[in-house]
Length: 361
Length: 234
Image 1 (cartoon, helix red, strand yellow):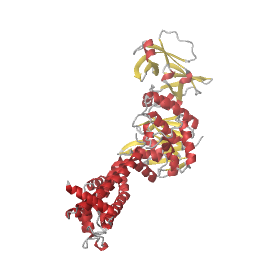
Image 2 (image 1 turned 30 degrees about the vertical axis):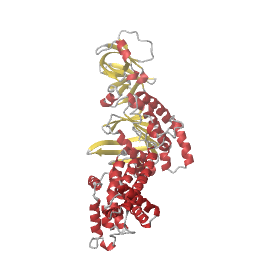
Image 3 (image 1 turned 135 degrees about the vertical axis):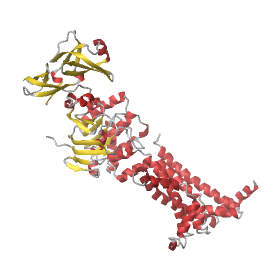
Image 4 (image 1 turned 90 degrees about the vertical axis):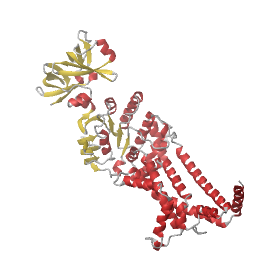
């Protein structure tokens, strides 16, 4: 098992008597990006500040490479770098901003020049050293803020909602670029966001926070595929996990009885074991009840009825149910019109066995 | 208008003649006010930084004191400093009354609250998150403070200008603690008052011109520093 680059244990922080953060354990694994996901006010940024040794916790410990560290430990803090939602560029040029941390580390001016140029090129702003930092657009400023952090070659990179204040097009572009940069740099990263799509794009692992606590933590596919409770399911736009019992398990595919509805999942499970299942809305296909369903490798085919339809950004979240099984699907506005869906409409539901996430209960 | 023309002519002649006592007066003014401004900056900017960035018990009270101090009448300062330094006062044994150090102390008391209050306002306008950002990039507390002062430099230049302006043209306090002794504690403002009382308008006008010129030069220099600081603040 790989040792954690950063591990926190029993971290607590309260403001004016109200508990803001209460996390028993969390780890950042070397070279991986952990997305700290949760609604506004869930304690994500406060937790990031404590992990980054910028704020002192009321209780608990932060360990860097196995050794306990505190806010007073500047050498430990020097191994990290952060960028925040508001870029907070210093007055001066782009080059001066990117060089700031290098100057603090007394790096020679010759080396600084080279590293600043390379960092700016890395974030797509080659040759921007002499521009004023205070005349940049939001997206450009965020790229400079990322360059200012990356230029330090930190062991730990802390990004606090770096794209939250950008317009959708710029946000999409930078999400893609940030994901690529983080993937190529393989720097251990803590990425705070309230946006699932952003977390999905950049992260290897995810921790979901609610009211200061981590309610779900693990690899992205695991956490996003199988909500641990009703609140998490709602936050992820899914239905709560379906309970079932494994009827048979052959060649890595399990048939699971979910209150009279059989579902298939790619998983090695003991026959008779109790399990919970989940499926991401974007993995679910809907067809009209009398439509001829095209040949497909999807093992799960259900006849169900529409129970709920809710707008969700540019798409619609449609919840279908059959007996105790409730599954959410995400469909486009055009598909909603084509299928003439309303509450109570019968539909056919398709999803692959590989799309079903299963956990023993 | 004849009175102005005559005084102007006499004043010019006096300055051109290079009369030693006039230039001594100018030099004493520069020495006293220069030292007072320097001390006010050395003490006032750190005090303003603490008042503007730290949260502690009594901070609000100290800010009120600093802001009230900005409107402190120089004659009141002169009176209190004179009493403190008088023979019967607690610091009488130092025998500083009617000396340049006494004038520096009085002018420091006038300038210090101004520099501290304007500096506090300037640094408190720098977002806390900017300091957090500097810390996150590895800044020590001292480096974080320097970054904050650098960000607040426009306001700090205003603090210097306000502090200097408050004492270079001040006359009440320096008269009371300096005594206007020729060659020792006579400065431009006290000399202007004396020459005017004597009806000797030429030297008074000449010194007034030098005083105005000095204020102008200092403000031109500050404006140049300010415009170089503004370079990247579009």
